Image (cartoon, rainbow, N blue to C red; front, side, top):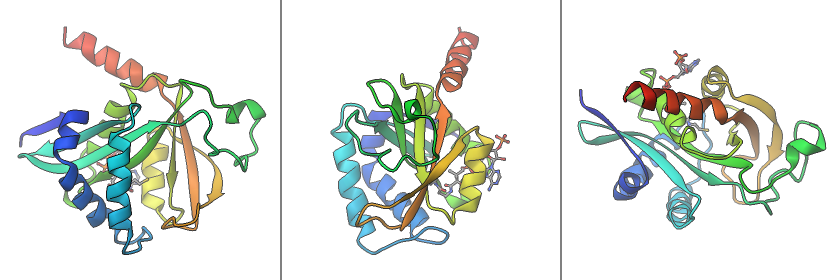
Length: 193
Ligand SMILES: CC(C)(COP(=O)(O)OP(=O)(O)OC[C@H]1O[C@@H](n2cnc3c(N)ncnc32)[C@H](O)[C@@H]1OP(=O)(O)O)[C@@H](O)C(=O)NCCC(=O)NCCS
């Protein structure tokens, strides 16, 4: 089976397919869903593409979208850490340019899971970022998803209450160092020389 990975340009060309896969994956349990989320996600994703710090990685099999991962830099003026989740030392919550990448959304089509696609998408995306660390938020009931992230080296930070309009009342935050992912990409590139 032909499997192809692509970045930002290819993701933009597959905008509608990404939105359809997002709806398909996140509209069923364990994920919370409200009918307006489909339209909200579409608008959010369109705005992300206009953000210079946005990057994306998609996977195609036989020219069909089977997975995506995307995100952008956390703004230095972001209020993301306002509640100090996880009770870390103050330095943990400091934001400055180059500090934090936010993995916004990730999904693999249900009939294509457990074949390494999720790992490849996350590794490919993070490995090309210049930030020190990546963060993400997960809905608390998504046990399998959290297991997947832990397996990839992500560490649980704490729980935050959602912003108004969010599909889930609470979110769990995970964090990971990006350097090992960059090292993987560099090693793979050297191996191909
Ligand atoms: C989470 C998700 C992207 C993982 O994608 P995937 O292609 O199935 O994952 P992979 O096959 O790359 O698995 C990567 C690793 O995690 C492990 N893993 C995957 N699913 C797991 C699970 N449910 N429990 C434990 N480990 C798991 C695999 O064994 C693998 O480990 P290894 O590489 O050391 O062998 C996919 O299951 C999905 O789309 N889930 C629904 C949407 C979602 O949860 N998105 C994230 C929202 S924050």
